[in-house]
Image 1 (cartoon, one colour):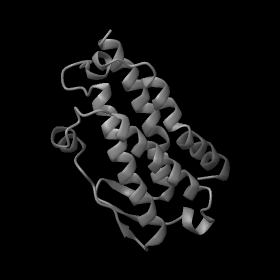
Image 2 (cartoon, rainbow, N blue to C red):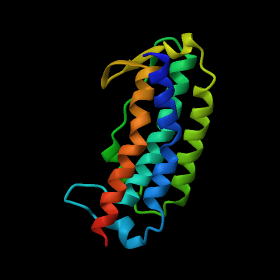
Image 3 (tube, helix red, strand yellow):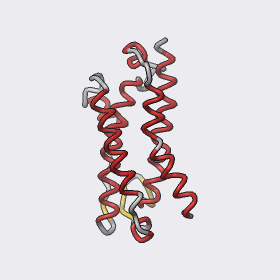
Image 4 (tube, rainbow, N blue to C red):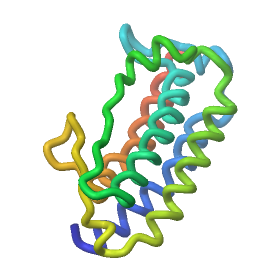
Length: 156
């Protein structure tokens, strides 16, 4: 990955909380809990997923940077949604999402070229390293912000 692409992805990653917060601005409980289509998550569930995913991704980034050939554990996001009470209020999950993202963003700003090139082993990805991590999580919040907007519309 060239430096310009990396910088663009880091900027997109850093902007992730803002776009999610914007998608949630003024949301009513009815909008947060509207099911947009059978089998699709509500906006509330998406927020909890973002918190869980971001906390997991923060640990993954740290393992990749700190260890050699770090083992990266997968998790079942649907199991989390079913079992971790995703019907609870979203305030704490928004804080967790923001805090984990801001902490990881600060770390990204300090990485050396050697650290950017580090890789690990992830059971769901053929190649998984710091740059692949960034590609995934730079898009993640933006993609879910769009889902939140669609889910909220189903509740209006």
